[in-house]
Image 1 (spheres, rainbow, N blue to C red):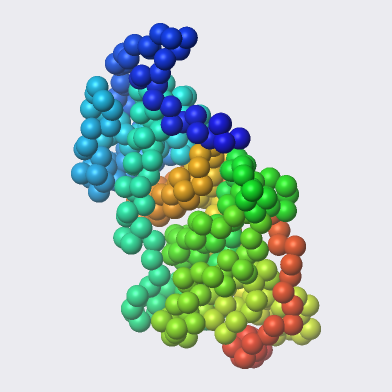
Image 2: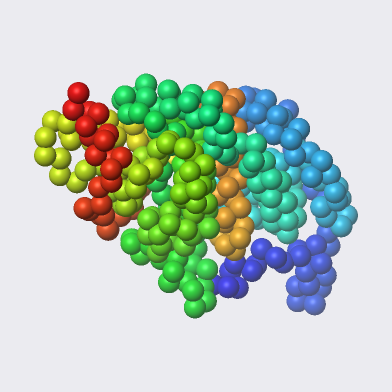
Length: 347
């Protein structure tokens, strides 16, 4: 499998086949901003033209250096190559042909543009940092099903990858027997990501990821004051991470569960929109793990960018997301805050 992953590092411009050096040729590069109408552009690149141009303005300077030995590929071409890769999950050679460049150039471009997008994380993926921001988020979540003090919903989703090979490969095999990254996500009431942890192999349980996460440390250090996260039964209930009751016994507990689950549903919708917009997250990435992690983060940033721009979903998107259910349900870990919330729903 290593030879399959490493093939993207070939330098095709200087490759020798049967002792004969392949001649490098400059192919015509189509300008898809001009060629495609708005509908077809959106369908192929998953973002609308005005959003792509906005994004280009933010990362243009990082894309100006020379990419290949013999030609200078423009920043807009670099960006569209990368977006097409996210939108199709195709092999590098297919994306390269789409843009009129070599496979080796496409590989380098995708990595470079992905890293440039990831540098926008502090601007686009962040938890509320002020009392006013937390209060505003709590109000938005409360409108859903009257659950108080919530600033985020948390869950994990599996992003498919090819086997990384080697002695650590089994760590990436999930419960369904396929290879994946288990990505922890927190979203707000507007279906935007507030935190993303893309670094964990598919065999890792959701609660173990949370135990090691930055967001847990921030809540433990009381940076979020009395704010709450909502999670499913795969998480241990904590004073700041509220999970549903496994077997509610009375009307108050029923109301607590109903409100908790209706409010928490925003994370399911967010994950469906994200993976639906960028099929590469479902098809399975054929690249090394560090780039997989960067693509996950970059597409999460682009999801938030699309939400800020008020974009609809592309017309051919199926937003159904195959879930891998937790095989461990954590029971008997009620907290004082959970009990107070149940009392709140009894009135």
